[in-house]
Length: 238
Image 1: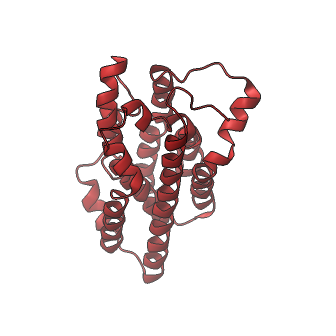
Image 2: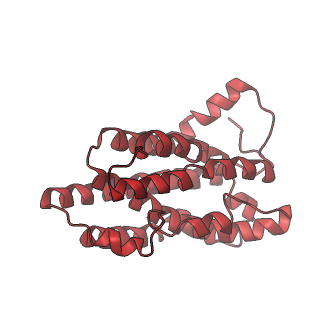
């Protein structure tokens, strides 16, 4: 698995240089504007409850790896609550009618985010090899480690405006994103790297890493366009 983790690290470094990350780093832009895409990211943030509970978690666990994934699923599967809290804190708990809410969530401007969610669900539904699910988890965690670091820096600035803690976009969420599966063991990274893969598994793992990072890159590019088009106080304009 060591070659796969090295490839994930390579893709992680590339992801850190995307235009979306540069946008987050641009302090000449109001921090509220740099996070105006947040409501449009709802389909991803809210889907993790079901992804972890229904597709990754298998109980009772029949292997050490499944036990690790189960532990991870309980931790990762509750972050959606923080997202809801941040929507309130950031002033996005507007009253808009139900049909406009549906049009917003399933609109043309969030196609890539939804496609990313659908692809993750498809992979985790039909992939029977638990090692490939681990590869997907490690890839997701790597993207989260990069993105949430930059987002947390913006949230620090935002806190000066809102005077409130931001549980999803702030440092407390980033602290949970180590870049690896969340499990109760001393050296998760060593354990993951020590896993032996067949040549067929290795090829498939590289393909999955490429797919996950490509989907995240496209989704974040879509969120960049959204932020450039919508004022932070009018994100729901259709």
